[in-house]
Length: 186
Image 1: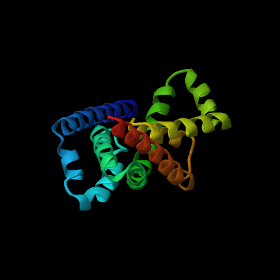
Image 2: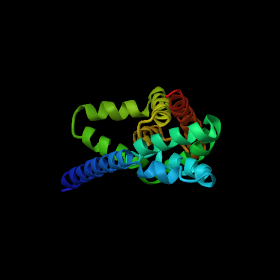
Image 3: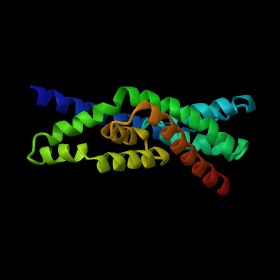
């Protein structure tokens, strides 16, 4: 019965991600989010913060990249990266608090059914593997890829909140700087 429930949760997660990507593509194609975030000069900093929050989720990453690029062209790269990274930390904290362990539990449940499961669980306990997942999770957070995967990897490494917040800020700041550089070169 538990395996059936776990399979249902995996299918539910996959459906949510598919719908999220579909909605993000629609938002990016129509330009609705970009227009809202860059509509007035007074809202640009708030728009950068909001776009930073949207930068973290599979649901909203593509339109957030477009909005951050446009805002960086107007306000400058460093201001946009600073404000956007603050927003991204807020978005990452929401994800970190609610789903960081859920993905890890799903993966461990799948692996637990095979003989490799014990070896994989032993690998997760190794110090070097924890540092590797910490580093890889930070790289994913810095990239335009949705942060859920990086946060799940940080869940594997049992990252504490006191390490997660500065890591999230620095990685998102770097990622938004690159978006701004690319946007200004276009």
